[in-house]
Image (cartoon, rainbow, N blue to C red):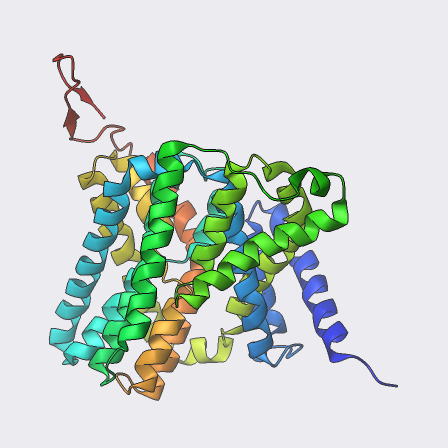
Length: 406
Protein backbone atom coordinates (compact mmCIF):
# COMPACT_ATOMS: atom_id res chain seq x y z
CA UNK A 1 0.00 0.00 0.00
CA UNK A 2 1.37 3.42 -1.05
CA UNK A 3 1.61 6.04 1.70
CA UNK A 4 1.89 9.68 0.67
CA UNK A 5 5.06 11.05 2.38
CA UNK A 6 3.55 14.54 2.50
CA UNK A 7 0.61 13.35 4.63
CA UNK A 8 3.04 11.41 6.80
CA UNK A 9 5.20 14.52 7.33
CA UNK A 10 2.39 16.94 8.09
CA UNK A 11 0.70 14.48 10.43
CA UNK A 12 3.95 14.22 12.37
CA UNK A 13 4.33 18.01 12.50
CA UNK A 14 0.77 18.61 13.69
CA UNK A 15 0.82 15.84 16.32
CA UNK A 16 4.17 17.00 17.73
CA UNK A 17 3.08 20.66 17.84
CA UNK A 18 -0.18 19.80 19.63
CA UNK A 19 1.53 17.62 22.26
CA UNK A 20 4.31 20.14 22.90
CA UNK A 21 1.92 23.10 22.73
CA UNK A 22 -0.35 21.62 25.42
CA UNK A 23 2.67 20.69 27.58
CA UNK A 24 4.39 24.07 27.33
CA UNK A 25 1.15 25.99 27.77
CA UNK A 26 0.82 24.34 31.19
CA UNK A 27 4.14 26.00 32.13
CA UNK A 28 3.07 29.30 30.44
CA UNK A 29 5.83 29.00 27.82
CA UNK A 30 5.11 30.68 24.44
CA UNK A 31 4.00 28.54 21.49
CA UNK A 32 7.14 29.64 19.63
CA UNK A 33 9.16 27.26 21.81
CA UNK A 34 6.76 24.41 20.96
CA UNK A 35 7.32 25.03 17.25
CA UNK A 36 11.11 25.14 17.65
CA UNK A 37 11.24 21.95 19.74
CA UNK A 38 8.86 20.27 17.28
CA UNK A 39 11.36 21.00 14.51
CA UNK A 40 14.19 19.42 16.50
CA UNK A 41 12.14 16.27 17.23
CA UNK A 42 10.75 15.66 13.72
CA UNK A 43 13.87 16.87 11.90
CA UNK A 44 16.54 14.77 10.16
CA UNK A 45 18.71 14.56 13.29
CA UNK A 46 16.10 12.98 15.60
CA UNK A 47 13.01 11.08 14.38
CA UNK A 48 13.64 11.96 10.73
CA UNK A 49 9.93 12.39 9.92
CA UNK A 50 11.00 15.16 7.53
CA UNK A 51 14.42 14.77 5.92
CA UNK A 52 14.11 17.26 3.04
CA UNK A 53 14.69 20.65 4.62
CA UNK A 54 14.32 22.43 1.26
CA UNK A 55 10.55 21.85 1.32
CA UNK A 56 10.34 23.52 4.73
CA UNK A 57 12.48 26.43 3.53
CA UNK A 58 9.95 27.20 0.79
CA UNK A 59 7.06 27.01 3.24
CA UNK A 60 8.83 29.13 5.88
CA UNK A 61 9.20 32.06 3.45
CA UNK A 62 5.39 32.11 3.17
CA UNK A 63 5.17 32.30 6.95
CA UNK A 64 7.53 35.29 7.11
CA UNK A 65 5.53 37.12 4.41
CA UNK A 66 2.22 36.53 6.18
CA UNK A 67 3.74 37.67 9.48
CA UNK A 68 4.93 40.97 7.95
CA UNK A 69 1.59 41.37 6.18
CA UNK A 70 -0.33 41.15 9.46
CA UNK A 71 2.10 43.51 11.19
CA UNK A 72 1.61 46.05 8.40
CA UNK A 73 -2.12 45.98 9.10
CA UNK A 74 -1.71 46.53 12.85
CA UNK A 75 1.14 49.02 13.26
CA UNK A 76 0.43 52.75 13.28
CA UNK A 77 2.63 54.04 10.46
CA UNK A 78 2.28 57.69 11.47
CA UNK A 79 3.76 56.88 14.90
CA UNK A 80 6.42 54.67 13.32
CA UNK A 81 7.53 57.38 10.88
CA UNK A 82 7.48 60.02 13.63
CA UNK A 83 10.41 58.21 15.31
CA UNK A 84 12.45 57.54 12.15
CA UNK A 85 15.64 58.83 13.80
CA UNK A 86 15.59 55.95 16.28
CA UNK A 87 14.97 53.36 13.57
CA UNK A 88 17.54 54.56 11.02
CA UNK A 89 20.09 55.94 13.48
CA UNK A 90 19.74 52.95 15.78
CA UNK A 91 20.22 50.45 12.95
CA UNK A 92 23.30 52.27 11.62
CA UNK A 93 24.91 52.51 15.09
CA UNK A 94 24.12 48.86 15.78
CA UNK A 95 25.77 47.65 12.56
CA UNK A 96 28.89 49.74 13.21
CA UNK A 97 29.05 48.54 16.84
CA UNK A 98 28.70 44.89 15.72
CA UNK A 99 31.54 45.34 13.23
CA UNK A 100 33.73 46.86 15.95
CA UNK A 101 33.01 43.96 18.34
CA UNK A 102 33.90 41.36 15.70
CA UNK A 103 36.93 43.45 14.74
CA UNK A 104 38.15 43.37 18.33
CA UNK A 105 37.62 39.58 18.44
CA UNK A 106 39.56 39.21 15.16
CA UNK A 107 42.70 40.67 16.78
CA UNK A 108 42.80 37.51 18.91
CA UNK A 109 41.68 35.06 16.19
CA UNK A 110 43.62 36.66 13.29
CA UNK A 111 40.65 36.89 10.90
CA UNK A 112 40.73 38.66 7.52
CA UNK A 113 38.83 41.92 6.98
CA UNK A 114 36.40 40.13 4.68
CA UNK A 115 35.52 37.66 7.44
CA UNK A 116 35.20 40.45 10.03
CA UNK A 117 32.73 42.35 7.83
CA UNK A 118 30.76 39.16 7.01
CA UNK A 119 30.41 38.09 10.67
CA UNK A 120 29.72 41.67 11.80
CA UNK A 121 26.83 41.87 9.35
CA UNK A 122 25.61 38.42 10.41
CA UNK A 123 25.30 39.25 14.13
CA UNK A 124 23.82 42.71 13.45
CA UNK A 125 20.63 41.32 11.88
CA UNK A 126 17.85 40.29 14.26
CA UNK A 127 14.99 37.91 13.52
CA UNK A 128 11.97 39.70 12.10
CA UNK A 129 9.79 36.60 12.39
CA UNK A 130 10.71 35.65 15.96
CA UNK A 131 10.49 39.18 17.38
CA UNK A 132 7.21 40.03 15.66
CA UNK A 133 5.68 36.77 16.86
CA UNK A 134 6.74 37.51 20.45
CA UNK A 135 5.43 41.09 20.26
CA UNK A 136 2.15 39.87 18.81
CA UNK A 137 1.72 37.19 21.49
CA UNK A 138 2.29 39.88 24.14
CA UNK A 139 0.04 42.37 22.30
CA UNK A 140 2.89 44.90 22.10
CA UNK A 141 3.11 45.51 18.33
CA UNK A 142 1.74 49.04 18.76
CA UNK A 143 3.45 49.87 22.06
CA UNK A 144 6.27 52.44 22.13
CA UNK A 145 9.04 49.86 22.34
CA UNK A 146 7.19 47.60 19.89
CA UNK A 147 7.08 50.31 17.21
CA UNK A 148 10.77 51.17 17.67
CA UNK A 149 11.79 47.52 17.46
CA UNK A 150 9.63 46.89 14.38
CA UNK A 151 11.06 49.99 12.72
CA UNK A 152 14.63 48.77 13.32
CA UNK A 153 13.74 45.31 12.00
CA UNK A 154 12.36 46.83 8.79
CA UNK A 155 15.47 48.99 8.30
CA UNK A 156 17.62 45.89 8.89
CA UNK A 157 15.68 44.06 6.16
CA UNK A 158 16.38 46.95 3.77
CA UNK A 159 20.05 47.01 4.86
CA UNK A 160 20.34 43.34 3.87
CA UNK A 161 20.68 44.34 0.19
CA UNK A 162 23.79 46.54 0.55
CA UNK A 163 25.24 43.95 2.96
CA UNK A 164 24.95 41.25 0.27
CA UNK A 165 26.54 43.57 -2.31
CA UNK A 166 29.48 44.34 0.01
CA UNK A 167 30.07 40.67 0.88
CA UNK A 168 29.99 39.67 -2.80
CA UNK A 169 32.31 42.56 -3.71
CA UNK A 170 34.82 41.47 -1.06
CA UNK A 171 34.54 37.95 -2.49
CA UNK A 172 35.50 39.22 -5.94
CA UNK A 173 32.14 39.83 -7.62
CA UNK A 174 31.44 43.20 -9.23
CA UNK A 175 27.80 44.28 -8.73
CA UNK A 176 25.75 44.81 -11.90
CA UNK A 177 24.60 48.37 -12.54
CA UNK A 178 21.13 47.23 -13.65
CA UNK A 179 20.55 45.26 -10.43
CA UNK A 180 21.74 48.17 -8.29
CA UNK A 181 19.43 50.60 -10.08
CA UNK A 182 16.47 48.25 -9.61
CA UNK A 183 17.17 47.91 -5.89
CA UNK A 184 17.59 51.66 -5.39
CA UNK A 185 14.41 52.38 -7.38
CA UNK A 186 12.37 49.76 -5.54
CA UNK A 187 13.66 50.74 -2.10
CA UNK A 188 13.05 54.43 -2.74
CA UNK A 189 9.53 53.76 -4.04
CA UNK A 190 8.56 51.66 -1.00
CA UNK A 191 9.98 54.14 1.52
CA UNK A 192 8.35 57.09 -0.27
CA UNK A 193 5.00 55.33 -0.36
CA UNK A 194 5.14 54.43 3.36
CA UNK A 195 6.09 58.01 4.31
CA UNK A 196 3.36 59.44 2.04
CA UNK A 197 0.72 57.13 3.55
CA UNK A 198 1.82 58.00 7.09
CA UNK A 199 1.76 61.75 6.50
CA UNK A 200 -1.38 62.12 4.36
CA UNK A 201 -3.39 59.41 6.21
CA UNK A 202 -5.39 58.80 3.05
CA UNK A 203 -7.89 55.99 2.80
CA UNK A 204 -7.34 53.91 -0.34
CA UNK A 205 -10.09 51.88 -1.98
CA UNK A 206 -9.63 48.31 -3.07
CA UNK A 207 -11.19 47.35 -6.44
CA UNK A 208 -14.45 45.41 -6.07
CA UNK A 209 -14.23 45.67 -2.26
CA UNK A 210 -18.03 45.80 -1.89
CA UNK A 211 -18.47 42.58 -3.88
CA UNK A 212 -15.66 40.80 -2.03
CA UNK A 213 -17.17 41.66 1.36
CA UNK A 214 -20.15 39.45 0.58
CA UNK A 215 -18.17 36.45 -0.68
CA UNK A 216 -15.94 34.59 1.78
CA UNK A 217 -14.20 32.48 -0.89
CA UNK A 218 -13.22 35.53 -2.93
CA UNK A 219 -12.08 37.24 0.27
CA UNK A 220 -9.48 34.50 0.86
CA UNK A 221 -8.04 34.75 -2.64
CA UNK A 222 -8.16 38.56 -2.73
CA UNK A 223 -6.31 38.78 0.60
CA UNK A 224 -3.66 36.27 -0.53
CA UNK A 225 -3.25 38.14 -3.83
CA UNK A 226 -2.62 41.40 -1.98
CA UNK A 227 0.04 39.82 0.23
CA UNK A 228 1.89 37.72 -2.34
CA UNK A 229 1.31 40.11 -5.23
CA UNK A 230 3.27 42.94 -3.61
CA UNK A 231 5.84 40.43 -2.29
CA UNK A 232 6.35 39.32 -5.91
CA UNK A 233 6.71 42.93 -7.12
CA UNK A 234 9.22 43.56 -4.35
CA UNK A 235 11.31 40.60 -5.52
CA UNK A 236 11.23 41.93 -9.09
CA UNK A 237 13.23 44.87 -7.74
CA UNK A 238 15.63 42.40 -6.02
CA UNK A 239 14.33 43.38 -2.59
CA UNK A 240 13.09 41.19 0.25
CA UNK A 241 9.64 39.71 -0.37
CA UNK A 242 8.87 40.38 3.31
CA UNK A 243 9.13 44.15 2.70
CA UNK A 244 6.57 43.85 -0.11
CA UNK A 245 4.21 41.88 2.14
CA UNK A 246 4.58 44.53 4.87
CA UNK A 247 3.69 47.25 2.34
CA UNK A 248 0.61 45.24 1.34
CA UNK A 249 -0.45 45.19 5.00
CA UNK A 250 -0.14 49.00 5.14
CA UNK A 251 -2.35 49.30 2.05
CA UNK A 252 -4.99 47.04 3.60
CA UNK A 253 -4.90 49.08 6.82
CA UNK A 254 -5.39 52.29 4.84
CA UNK A 255 -8.49 50.84 3.13
CA UNK A 256 -10.11 50.06 6.51
CA UNK A 257 -10.64 46.49 5.27
CA UNK A 258 -8.56 44.82 7.95
CA UNK A 259 -11.45 42.91 9.51
CA UNK A 260 -12.30 40.62 6.61
CA UNK A 261 -8.68 40.32 5.43
CA UNK A 262 -7.50 39.33 8.91
CA UNK A 263 -10.41 36.91 9.31
CA UNK A 264 -9.75 35.29 5.92
CA UNK A 265 -6.02 34.77 6.34
CA UNK A 266 -5.79 34.00 10.07
CA UNK A 267 -5.69 30.18 9.66
CA UNK A 268 -3.04 30.42 6.89
CA UNK A 269 -1.07 32.84 9.04
CA UNK A 270 -1.01 30.57 12.11
CA UNK A 271 -0.06 27.49 10.08
CA UNK A 272 2.74 28.94 7.95
CA UNK A 273 4.29 31.00 10.76
CA UNK A 274 4.42 27.79 12.80
CA UNK A 275 6.16 26.05 9.88
CA UNK A 276 8.79 28.79 9.85
CA UNK A 277 9.77 28.06 13.45
CA UNK A 278 9.60 24.31 12.84
CA UNK A 279 12.09 24.70 9.97
CA UNK A 280 14.51 26.58 12.25
CA UNK A 281 14.32 23.77 14.80
CA UNK A 282 15.09 21.24 12.06
CA UNK A 283 18.52 22.80 11.58
CA UNK A 284 19.64 21.83 15.09
CA UNK A 285 21.48 18.55 15.56
CA UNK A 286 21.53 17.72 19.31
CA UNK A 287 24.64 15.50 18.86
CA UNK A 288 26.60 18.27 17.13
CA UNK A 289 25.58 20.62 19.93
CA UNK A 290 26.80 18.13 22.54
CA UNK A 291 30.13 17.61 20.75
CA UNK A 292 30.83 21.32 20.27
CA UNK A 293 28.84 22.79 23.13
CA UNK A 294 31.68 24.82 24.75
CA UNK A 295 32.39 26.85 21.58
CA UNK A 296 28.72 27.14 20.62
CA UNK A 297 27.69 28.14 24.15
CA UNK A 298 30.38 30.84 24.34
CA UNK A 299 29.51 32.25 20.89
CA UNK A 300 25.75 32.14 21.51
CA UNK A 301 26.15 33.86 24.89
CA UNK A 302 28.49 36.42 23.29
CA UNK A 303 25.96 37.13 20.51
CA UNK A 304 22.96 37.44 22.86
CA UNK A 305 24.82 39.57 25.39
CA UNK A 306 26.48 41.81 22.78
CA UNK A 307 23.30 42.43 20.81
CA UNK A 308 21.29 43.06 23.97
CA UNK A 309 23.59 45.72 25.36
CA UNK A 310 24.46 47.34 22.02
CA UNK A 311 20.77 47.86 21.32
CA UNK A 312 19.97 48.82 24.93
CA UNK A 313 22.61 51.58 24.89
CA UNK A 314 21.34 52.76 21.50
CA UNK A 315 17.73 52.95 22.72
CA UNK A 316 18.79 54.80 25.86
CA UNK A 317 21.06 57.18 23.93
CA UNK A 318 18.16 57.98 21.59
CA UNK A 319 15.84 58.86 24.47
CA UNK A 320 14.23 55.76 25.99
CA UNK A 321 14.36 54.88 29.68
CA UNK A 322 16.64 52.07 30.84
CA UNK A 323 13.89 49.54 31.52
CA UNK A 324 12.46 49.90 28.03
CA UNK A 325 15.96 50.04 26.54
CA UNK A 326 17.00 46.73 28.11
CA UNK A 327 13.75 45.09 27.01
CA UNK A 328 14.23 46.42 23.47
CA UNK A 329 17.81 45.15 23.51
CA UNK A 330 16.58 41.73 24.62
CA UNK A 331 14.02 41.65 21.81
CA UNK A 332 16.76 42.33 19.25
CA UNK A 333 19.33 40.02 20.87
CA UNK A 334 19.10 37.01 18.59
CA UNK A 335 20.73 36.51 15.17
CA UNK A 336 18.06 36.58 12.47
CA UNK A 337 16.94 34.19 9.75
CA UNK A 338 18.31 36.45 6.99
CA UNK A 339 21.79 35.86 8.43
CA UNK A 340 21.54 32.35 6.95
CA UNK A 341 21.58 34.06 3.54
CA UNK A 342 24.68 36.12 4.39
CA UNK A 343 26.62 33.18 5.80
CA UNK A 344 25.78 31.07 2.71
CA UNK A 345 27.17 33.82 0.46
CA UNK A 346 30.31 33.92 2.63
CA UNK A 347 30.78 30.17 2.10
CA UNK A 348 30.17 30.55 -1.65
CA UNK A 349 32.97 33.15 -1.94
CA UNK A 350 35.24 31.20 0.47
CA UNK A 351 35.27 34.00 3.06
CA UNK A 352 34.70 31.22 5.60
CA UNK A 353 35.31 27.47 5.45
CA UNK A 354 32.86 24.57 5.68
CA UNK A 355 33.36 24.01 9.43
CA UNK A 356 32.92 27.73 10.20
CA UNK A 357 29.78 27.71 8.08
CA UNK A 358 28.33 24.77 10.02
CA UNK A 359 29.21 26.43 13.34
CA UNK A 360 27.56 29.67 12.23
CA UNK A 361 24.38 27.81 11.26
CA UNK A 362 24.15 26.24 14.71
CA UNK A 363 24.97 29.48 16.52
CA UNK A 364 22.26 31.37 14.58
CA UNK A 365 19.69 28.59 15.10
CA UNK A 366 20.54 28.29 18.80
CA UNK A 367 20.11 32.04 19.41
CA UNK A 368 16.69 31.76 17.76
CA UNK A 369 15.87 28.77 19.96
CA UNK A 370 16.94 30.46 23.19
CA UNK A 371 15.78 34.02 22.54
CA UNK A 372 12.22 33.69 23.96
CA UNK A 373 13.73 32.56 27.29
CA UNK A 374 16.47 35.19 27.05
CA UNK A 375 13.90 37.96 26.48
CA UNK A 376 11.90 36.82 29.51
CA UNK A 377 15.12 36.75 31.58
CA UNK A 378 16.11 40.29 30.48
CA UNK A 379 12.63 41.62 31.25
CA UNK A 380 12.66 39.95 34.69
CA UNK A 381 16.21 41.22 35.34
CA UNK A 382 15.31 44.84 34.48
CA UNK A 383 12.35 44.73 36.88
CA UNK A 384 14.40 43.14 39.68
CA UNK A 385 17.14 45.76 39.41
CA UNK A 386 14.57 48.56 39.81
CA UNK A 387 16.05 50.52 36.95
CA UNK A 388 14.89 54.14 36.62
CA UNK A 389 11.84 54.66 34.44
CA UNK A 390 13.25 57.86 33.01
CA UNK A 391 16.12 58.56 30.67
CA UNK A 392 18.71 61.24 31.09
CA UNK A 393 17.53 63.14 28.04
CA UNK A 394 15.54 66.32 28.35
CA UNK A 395 13.06 67.96 26.04
CA UNK A 396 12.11 71.60 26.08
CA UNK A 397 8.53 72.46 25.09
CA UNK A 398 7.94 75.23 22.60
CA UNK A 399 6.16 77.35 25.18
CA UNK A 400 9.47 77.92 26.97
CA UNK A 401 8.63 76.10 30.22
CA UNK A 402 11.08 73.89 31.98
CA UNK A 403 11.90 70.70 30.16
CA UNK A 404 10.53 67.43 31.41
CA UNK A 405 12.07 64.01 31.48
CA UNK A 406 11.08 61.72 28.65
